[in-house]
Image 1 (cartoon, one colour):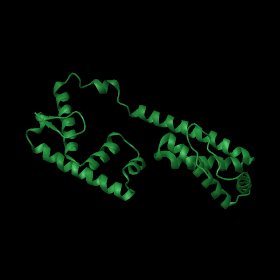
Image 2 (image 1 turned 90 degrees about the vertical axis):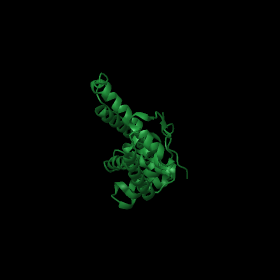
Image 3 (image 1 turned 60 degrees about the horizontal axis):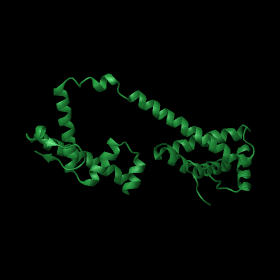
Image 4 (image 1 turned 120 degrees about the vertical axis):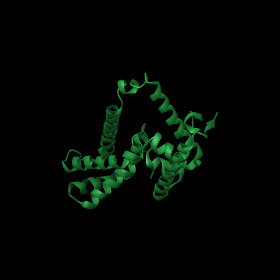
Amino acid sequence: MKTVGLATATPDSHLGSDRLGETVAGVMAGCDLAESSLYHFLSRTFRPFFLCQLGGQHADDLVADLFLIVLDSIRGRRLREPDCLNAYAFAIAQRLVARTIQRISAARRRERPSDDSLCGDLDNPETACQRTETVGLMHAVLGEMRASEREILRRFYLEEQPVEQIRSEMGLSANQFRLAKSRAKERFGVLGKQLLKAPIVPRAVRCCAWGRPQFS
């Protein structure tokens, strides 16, 4: 058995035509075991597709939505032929992905600040200077942290990467990630307070990229 779930291909069936036929017939008859078999089939077949399209944050929810739609279609006799199950489910999966992307885009448009709010302080040199110093202080604090701590904060808060992606690429379990993030936040706060007490920081820190602070 193979898993195919790329954006450019229709996922292959993980059940033979006979098993698919039994599954569809069982769902029509109200068999709980057949419904469970249908869910696992859809999850194994389409979860990689959702992961490829949207990442781990939405994959499980979309598998559940797909299952409920297909289940309702079989129960309502709108989907009777097992040979049509794969193509039908894939069409629904594509629509679910498109709908999710639309929702994400709409949410970001609502959260995006207006042009006035972006430009409102440009005529205020003092505010601009304070903002520059704040950003410089943040980078200075990050530059004093260990690489692993800095990477977690950067990925989670600045780049807003999904937790599953961060854990996978950094080789962390769920508990290890939560503990590492908590420790990184605590260390960030401690170092920030220490640098704020140093009178040289507000005007001397010059840091426009990740790395250690530079002092003039």
